[in-house]
Length: 76
Figure (tube, rainbow, N blue to C red):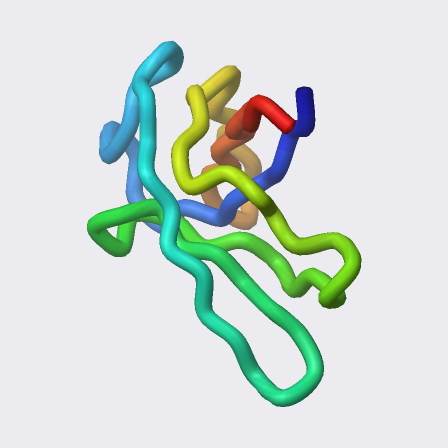
């Protein structure tokens, strides 16, 4: 199992326990992921750290002064 943190700007867009689908975006030097449909975005990953799954389960949602962070668990 692998956990990845995604930044979400508004609350109540996903729920704990919900299955979410992600899409991969690339730039010349790294990759990032978006929870469909444009709910939250991950940080940057190097090629060797790419996420192999396209679906995961929301394990936690954290509220901080900087916004909301969604923790998604992937089966890899």
